[in-house]
Length: 441
Length: 100
Image (cartoon, rainbow over all chains, first blue to last red):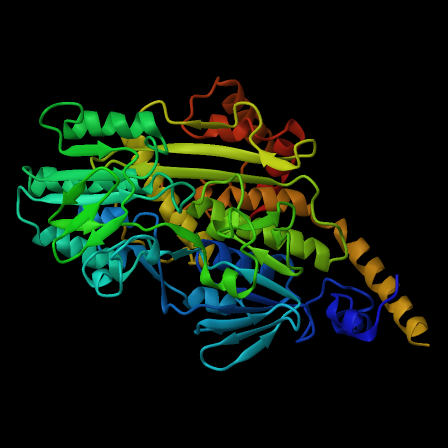
């Protein structure tokens, strides 16, 4: 093996190694100054934020630059409770203050260019950052042009609310303004999409609000999939138990194989292959793919160029070296959940910290998913899975019995769901024990 | 000339790392971190889900085995316990016991 000077300086044994040896008698785990491997992270959601925090704990010598355009973190998980009126936006919004202290450089900006040959990232603000490792945690890009009529003008009144924030707040206001007896039309994208149970939970949450405030109203679910795509017996059970599903008086009208093909925001009509469906409030979630930054880096190689294939052991792109992809953007066996994004952030931090320490990344890693959904009626239920590396299958799959859903909805699981939210927010953002959470179950 | 300068430094760096590797079970530390989205950062829960920090190791292992064989009723934990080996229960127990 030969190393040129540039390669040598790019490794963790480069200048950091020299500093450690000179100053501390060969203790390479010592905190070093500005000479550790340069890691640039794009996106401070569940994946990118957790990655950054844990990498700084496990490889303090790494120089972590975290680039994030939003001023505060707004949680997608739990955002359906805002639509129900259970929580307000401020209850699911948290500061980046603690995360900023955990990394070397927090850059409030948007990435506009990525050069994977020169290994640089450029922002809208005109700054350029060189990297040894680039971590892309940008979530999803919504493909409005795949739904006819869903143009910039239509997007002013038809919300997707599939990225929590102003969209969530506006959709809540629209639901509040809707008269009793009105119709809420919502859609479910074709799998794979962010948060598989999210749309069905949304139907529950909005139904719980209607039941209490506008009981004559209806919800039409236009689902692109052939059936309820997640936790089916539990959602159908909750719709039946609480909202009359299966009776003539059902609040919820579920229509499978009904992908929205067009939206008319003026006439308030969603067109599917079968029907023109009129609504008083329309909520269309368009098809999606890996985030824009993955396009900039040229790593959307999988699933017809929509998602990013990765090596499960390191989360490194299979097509571009030194680019790692976390969370929803990655094409994996994992559901696109907040828990998985948080866990894959740690898995990548673990792999890189091992590499920076001169060791191999763990050849048989473990990742978990625990995902709660609320009914809006004081109960919740889960899906939980452990994924382990399978050498024969060259994939991560659940061992026997390590995958399943709740036997029934319960109040106990609602308290767990609330606790999950607080703990995952604290874990992702480094919120201190004194931090005051206000979200309710 | 360049190589003869570089190689000893790499060797020294590698040795330094090798010594420190004995101090921390990094795999256990990573697996423990996987628990924290429910059980709180470092196993210190902020809500109704029980914390894991400082638990007595024998108790931790017993509970995980009881979740796995169904003798302790559970919501999510039967599935999680089925995903780990006995040796991993021991490693996780040791890690959480060490968290102050």
